[in-house]
Image (cartoon, rainbow, N blue to C red):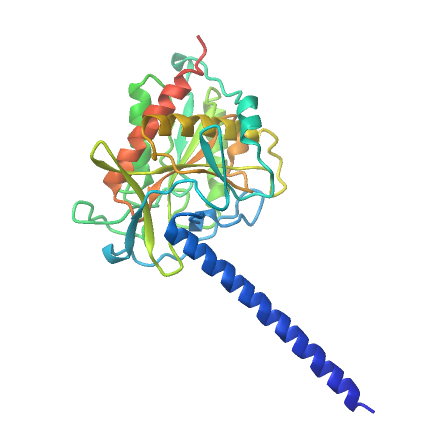
Length: 334
C-alpha cells in the first residue's frame, strides 16, 4: 500500500529537480548573454559597486578584488547603447531601480539647488565614503597597497582626486571644504553610516553647504576576470571617464526629491559630453540613497576605475571639475 506513495514522491522529486535545473540553465544563459553584450559593447557593464543595495541607506560590504596586473586590463570607452539604458535629452541613464524614469519630465522639473555667495561660507563639501580606493600601480605610481586597489597613502587614493577637484573649484571662485577622513579604514563595512555622521557634522559646522560630492573610483570586472578601465583620448591625453550615480527611495527610505538630484546630474552629463564627447559615462540610478538626502545637490562621482592609472583619473577629475564648476557658478545668488 505504501509503494504508490513512494512512487508519487519520487515523481514529485524528479519534477522539482527538473524545474531547478531549468532555472539554473536560464540564469546561466542570461549571464552568458550579458557577458556577450559587454564584449560587443551593446549592454550595460556592471561594476561591483553597482550591485543592488542591501538596505535603504546602502549597506556597503567589502568586495573581493583580484590583484591588478597589466595583462588583465582592457581599455573600454563606455557609452549608453543597448539593453538597460534610457536615452533622451542628450542623456544616457542606466536605471537599476524598479522605477520608470521619464528623462524629459525630470529635465523639465529641474533642480532647486542654489548657493549663497562664496564669501558667505563654504558652498560645496567634497568627501569620500571609500577614501582608500586607489588605481592601478605602474612605474610612476609605486604606492604601498593596504588592500587590493586600496591604500591609505593620500597621495595615491581618492583624497588626491578630491584635492584636484577642490583645486579647480577654488580657482573658479567656489568655496569648498574637502573632508579627507578615511571612512572605510580600518573597516570597510559600515562606511556609509560613518560618512553620513561626518556629513551631518560638516553641515552643522558649515550650514551654507548645499552640495556634497562623494568622490569614488569604480571597479569593473568581467566574469572572466578581465578588468575594464573606462578611458578615452581627449586632446591626446588618456583620460578616465566619469560616472555620476544618483540614489533614490526605491529601497523604501524617505528621499522624495531624488528626481531633482537626477536633473542636476543630467545637466552635468550634458555639459561634459558637449565639451568632451565620451567623458561622461551613463548616469546610474540606484535603489539606495547614498546619503544624498542630506542636501539638495548631493551626487556620487565615480572617477575612472581600478584599472585606470592615477594620472588618467586626475585628467578626468580636472575636466569634470571645470564643467561642474561652470554649472554650479550659475546657481550662485547674484
